[in-house]
Image (cartoon, rainbow, N blue to C red; front, side, top):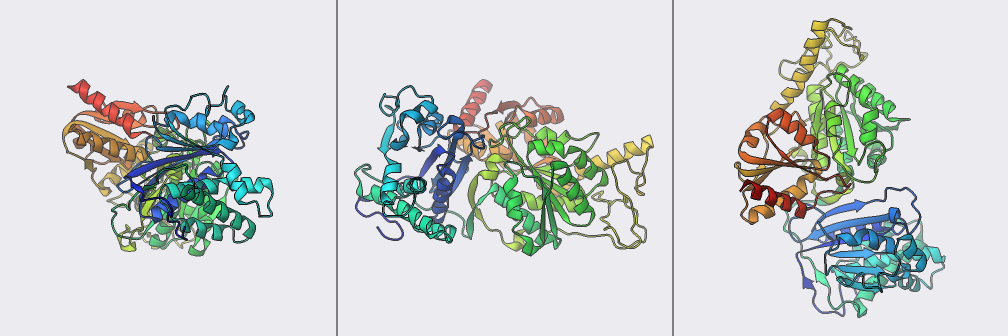
Length: 620
């Protein structure tokens, strides 16, 4: 075995197009780290990848319990990948609870790699097993590979002066090494990561290195596997790529927007899952003028960014659904004062505290209407993890051009999921032009641009541009407090008209497939990958189906009505109870069919394919 981890004794690898692996274990078993390293290595090897980390909802669930199971699924392929896969080809189960939670998703004849050391009476009882599933025939329809992972990992470390617990913690790297052998992955990227991560702890660096190599050597020298597998490089557009999660893309979108606009960025937020890491990551960009503040609560965070926008900064806050609810009054203030603030909402399953680590698209109506009175604003939604970068830059462009708040609706699936991202050329990024009013001649705080209806951005302290802002209704032009009924109606109309004019400034809706036909599948947000793949496969079967995806939700593209009218039926899949469907039916007066999923998990391609066939058969 060489430094790159190439196989030694076994024959040539069997070539496959794609593989879906799910690592599952206790929250302390390092499954997220294991999956992340396999993903990074596969991306470096040239595969297209897509991931789905699945965190336990309980912060400190009892070890070995069902609520404490943590999982990480990834799909790596030699062809285009748009989802982390419907079902795993391989389930790595580090304990009985992981097996019980995830066995239901494994197809017949799927492969299970089991850590037999964890299948003791105590863990079986915690998982709710009355008998050992490895012995009672429960797994008869699967390919089961029984390996004492913990024992083999600790034996490999027997000469190191570490505690038993420290040695056992390296079992995830032993399992990772075995999977690297099985799927012809190089060791070097992870060895380099270990060297960097544990530079200050050489004992653990050595332990993890030995465990990784030992797992690889076990696959190479053992008799457990008769073959291993190879996934060729994907044919992708030339360029410089990196693996990126949706939350990382939001961060880089904020930083890029600040640099494009040549304007300092202020990020104020309160920690909330699954958006907290946006705050953590942005705090590391002080060297490019980014300022971050962890506020005492969501209300304070929203008010802080309003103040930053009033002072002339690019202002952004991050949150999830419960936090967006708390921000609602202050967000109405941002609408009233017409200041360019951006809200990044990484949605999670609700209501209330809900399921903090599970994904959902249930904040759409809250983003549209969750403020007192008539308070319209712009709502955007990224389609993929890497699209979170582009949509964030677009949010700042629209916010500063039209002087309006913008909400970006990401979600836990996009925020935690990862894919390869081709780094854009700076010349390909849109312009963000920040213009502050400096001339007092003819100045009025609510005098509007004739095209965008944006009011001037006047920085406090600019001579001759003194004005007041606040949450009470304004007189048109002057901005003075007004209780006049007709003026209130006029200002309400103007604020709505300004948002509607944003539709003139966005691209037309793209249709995947024929522009007219029997069925259009209309989606938004993180459903993009599953919809796109389902429609692609349905079209390959000869079915008359196309797809369109909304990245601009408020306002919607001006040609959306024309697109909808070209199809006999419209299907709207959503990870909620039908919120976009409600909006589409009321606005365009079409009898759109819905397909709702509220399980905390993203759509699968197969379930969308089945619904497409069902609708087309009904139409026939």
